[in-house]
Amino acid sequence: MAWRIAGSYFETCSCDVVCPCTASLSFGATHDRCMVTLVFNVHSGDVEGVDVGGLTVAAVADTPKVMTDGNWRLGVFIDAAATNEQAEKLGAVFSGALGGPMEALGPLIGENLGVRRAEIEVREEGLSHAVRIGDEVDFEIEDIVPFGVESGQPVRLTGVFHPAGSELTVAHATRSSIDAFGVSYAARAAFSNSQFSWAA
Image 1 (spheres, helix red, strand yellow):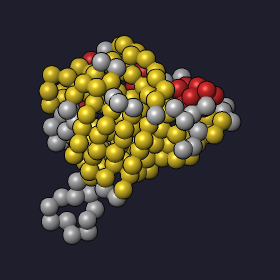
Image 2: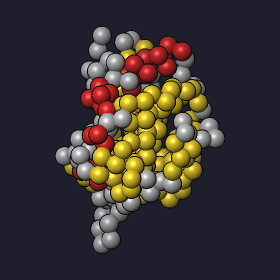
Image 3: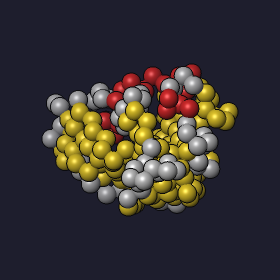
C-alpha cells in the first residue's frame, strides 16, 4: 500500500562549517569520522492507512570519514507519543523496508544500534531549530544568513543527494549535547529543510 509523509527536517554533525558529505557522500568528512543526528518532524502523513502526523523520528549515526565506505553505526529514536502501531509504521518507513529515500542508504549501514522510544521535543522558530530527546540529545541550530544579504534569506545548497530532499538550508550549531547509542560528539555543521516530503 502507498504511503506518504511530509514535514520539516534538520540535522547537525561533527564536521566544520559545511559538511563535505552533503556535496557528495564520496567526499571525506572534516575529521576522521562523521557523527550526525538527523531529525524528521512529521507534520502530516499516512503509512498503510495509519495516520503518523505530529510525530518525530530521529537517527544518530557514526560513519567512516568517507560515507560511501559503508559500515555506518546507526540508532533510531521514535517519538514516545506514537502508539505501537504508529511506531511500527514509522519504523518500516525509516528502515527503508517500505521503499523511499531511506532504502537507498540501507546498504551503507553496518551496525544497527537499536530503536528506542523516547520523549522528543522539537522547537522551530524562524531561523532557529532545536530538539531535545530525553537526556541524550539536546541541540539547537540556526540557519545562516550570509553577510550582505539584505533579504534575510538563508544560504541554500541545491541539487544534492540527501534523504531530506535535493535542497538544504545551511546552518550551524549554537548549542550541543549529544551522547546517544554510544555516539558522542560536539555538533558544529548543520542543515535544515522546512518542507521535506516522501512518498512511495
